[in-house]
Length: 168
Ligand SMILES: [Zn+2]
Image 1 (cartoon, rainbow, N blue to C red):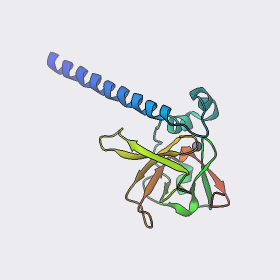
Image 2 (tube, rainbow, N blue to C red):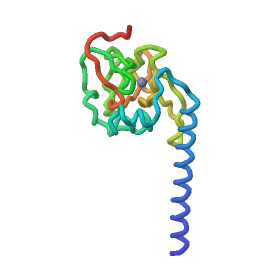
Image 3 (tube, rainbow, N blue to C red):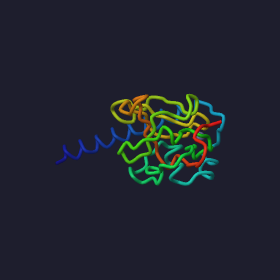
């Protein structure tokens, strides 16, 4: 009994240490990058809803099938909910069946940036808004032609702007 309690406590301590370490590294990496739109944490908290803040600024993931944008088939642009910059177009949207809005390419090469995310055991490609650094989602290599990419995006990180499908 004593031994098992000890092991459980050790496991909890290790988990806490890993979680804390990753959080620290993530915050450090973000701090080194600079973006055209740059607000303090307090300013972001005022500007965004709690859900938007959790995803855009803390890299949370929304529940699948929770975003009304998931089934949106209208023509238009998806803009970053943090800074209003177009990041995806309805022209590259497809139904991935995952429960998150999915796109096979960003609206332009420069609209988003990527980096490796080690939150899970295997590294994933994190994708964020190139203008404000807000976390959008992840990119996987199981998307449809012509790119084969699947940008799996949190709907709460996006606002939809009906109309033109290309960023001017
Ligand atoms: Zn942005």
